[in-house]
Image 1 (cartoon, rainbow, N blue to C red):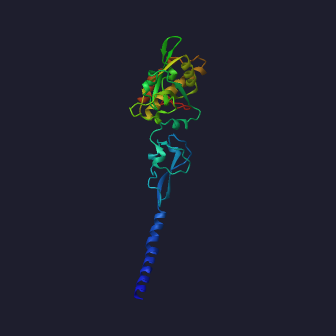
Image 2 (image 1 turned 60 degrees about the horizontal axis):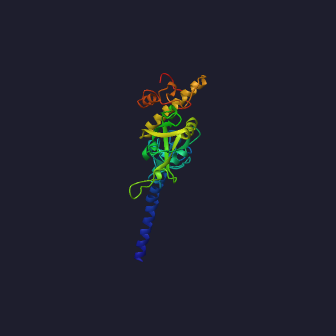
Image 3 (image 1 turned 90 degrees about the vertical axis):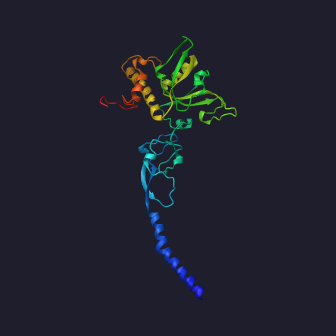
Length: 283
């Protein structure tokens, strides 16, 4: 009888503890709010996430994934490692610091730029198999008819999406053989506009194309070279609208020094050209 009384008292005490201590603590944890970063819009794999793509909201902290990202600065500028939907919470595994895989680039194509592959016609023409995804190259063309090499202004700065072997393996998919060798690429896939695509097809069928490495490094600097190439075409467009005859294959770029312009962008002497925007003279 005594033992039953003691057990009863213990049960009553435990019930009181649960009611007045544990339960309020659990409720408090469930009601506590923390900031997290959430997608505000849908983005595809390879998209570079901007400030407009995400938002910081408050959610209940109870049972929240330990790795969920809570600071916006840890997201903006990164690349989506997979397709993301509006409302998705962000984890480090969903983001990437780079966007080097071919599929990352393909998924972001929106009509402004295109992907085209050209044949690596000689070992030297493909930089001896050393081209990497994301490289900025200049394309030098040897013309069979004239027996001369030209450096078209329209192909001064072009981004390498990937190189591919004859078996269809992209650069990021290659595995090293036991003897330390690997299969050499047969084609290089480039990010181009319509005019560049047309020129590349013509040059591949009338001569030999060599890829000259210009830059390998961070995405921000690489983009500055591409900005200079965009400015080249913007100036050609202006001359066409003014009635002047232009040729995107012209080696000297119709008087526009694209190399100097790229250096000026990189050194901060001129602002980067952004398509569909006008740069004021006082910037």
